[in-house]
Length: 433
Image 1 (tube, rainbow, N blue to C red):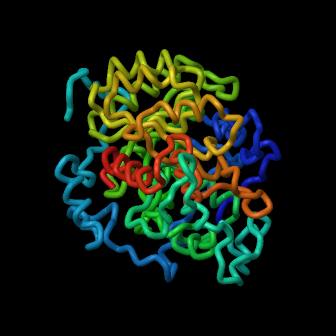
Image 2: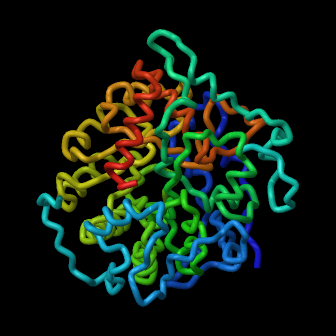
């Protein structure tokens, strides 16, 4: 049993510096064309990697045994996670979420308050992604530059002195591993590419947005066995045309996992790259919103060229004080402003797109949005930071989000320590991590 690999497309790389295309949806050029009928799967290649269970369960780096999907009793987390576990289970019992929902199940959701780059000799790695730096003791990137004292535009506190850190709130580990032909745990990934993981990295939320991959096996569970990986599950509008009751059940089953922290990404996409009929997008989006609200799961929202319709639908279904992550925002401030006003617990996710001067609209929005409403994400393997040469890394990964944090501090004329602390607090507020 091996990882299913894809043949990379030449136009799928979003790391080109200063390109106008950087302002577009980061996954557009990687969405494959499927032939899908009912609940059967196509034999065509997929951008998503399938991880057989033995791949991780036999790994010496995988010691998690506290979660079993067939366990007769509520799973208990390891001791390091006990406080978070107790807090989250008091508001939502992850292990007891019913999976009997079907497309015909009526759900009422009244709008009321509801409270990378070290060298490896492993033949499974794509060495073209990295240059060999691990043999030396220095880091590939000099993170000490973030501690320089420069009036107004730079932080004056060395980052290594911080007690806090950051969580990458949105990445696609399955797609990243597929692009790298990587086999192994996230802990092994961090060791192999430790030259680009700063000490402030505290984890990531892996997003699984093609529900067909959830139906094949339970490979995603192995990713969540790592202490620093959590999960979000939903159906991206690109895949909404294939949405079935069976896929919905697979999403709901995945959300029973104790480390499943959100529903999504979901949303609307009216760009020419999305071939899903708009009416189908609306139907699937509304259905997922209803399920998420019923389960009290935070929302991960994708939107492109559809903000008015998106807001109208959310106003009808989502409680005003609901926890929402507006993922990968790349547009103007006046586009996001109505969402900020309508949903006071909505957070706006920014990627390394901010590091490019050509992304003027997103950079201006980041300046104007209060720091209390911002979270950081990589959307890995997309949006390689401008500061990272492609000769060193071809793809973004969760360890590179610090570049975005630094850019936010520059745009807002704030100390990096203050920005880092605020972003971490915002992540805790919306995700409980």
